[in-house]
Image (cartoon, rainbow, N blue to C red; front, side, top):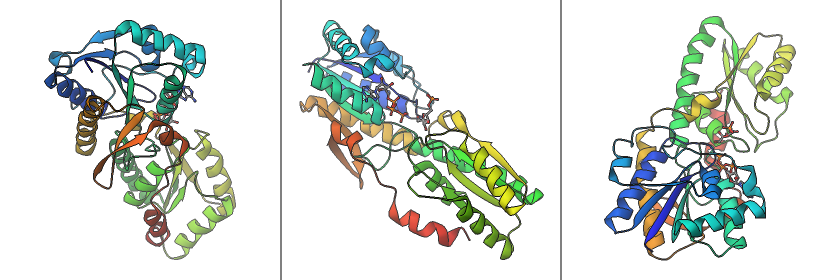
Length: 323
Ligand SMILES: Nc1ncnc2c1ncn2[C@@H]1O[C@H](COP(=O)(O)OP(=O)(O)OP(=O)(O)O)[C@@H](O)[C@H]1O
Ligand SMILES: O=P(O)(O)OC[C@H]1O[C@](O)(CO)[C@@H](O)[C@@H]1O
């Protein structure tokens, strides 16, 4: 292992820069050359790389987003696109690549490894959705969840003052991690997550029960699921059923930006170090993660083929604490 590349792919996540910084510093300390590949798989296909030295990553640990930029690249879904990427990896003379991204990024990486005899590939989980199997937390989740809790706190002030029902939609394409943890921490009255069957009748009944026992306002946290903006329809139906005024707030991309929390900086640093260590141990086709406080290596295929479950205990306590 002499020369490695690093890229960020999929949605940006706060803490990606801490991870890039850790990869660069660990690699340089071990006499490996590092190049940054710009804009995820778009840059990999184009061979768009820049040398990364100590000055490139200095003063970046506190920055949200990704200094390498990122993309969602349609061409990588095709074998032809991935073969172009493999050819570019050869041209760039890379022995290994650290891929920082989510489950889609690792799905693409697994297919790249199957299509071509290419550089060693090691993934680092980074997604505010936290939906990657093989790690308790993904880089970026903690910052996004704290952003959602702050928003819920602010909305609670106005909800209480006006005696209103609010639907707050958080991100999480097919996963309820953000909704569950921010809902518990923000004291939400109800949760709507893709992992659970939910009906307008159930939501309405729960809110009504709260009113009967003396609540004057309520907050429902909704995971966007596959349909961002779904909260507007749900809010309309619940409002009609209860004959009670409601408002909707979609947090959207607000949750993806901002300085990473301590947890995301530490996780990014740890997993960046671990990724370079894995490459030096001649591992390939795996993702580094942290499970139960231990560093782990999970085959890339498992990271997207297996479904990461929500914390059962958090799901169990929610109905008791929300009443
Ligand atoms: N099934 C797939 N086959 C080939 N490439 C894929 C596949 N899924 C995703 N990719 C590639 O990986 C990129 C990133 O995936 P995706 O957009 O799903 O984000 P992600 O890594 O899951 O991150 P996030 O959780 O933030 O959305 C895609 O734009 C595409 O280039
Ligand atoms: O930036 P885009 O392409 O709008 O992606 C939005 C999606 O990305 C995620 O934020 C994950 O990064 C999902 O929760 C959301 O559905």
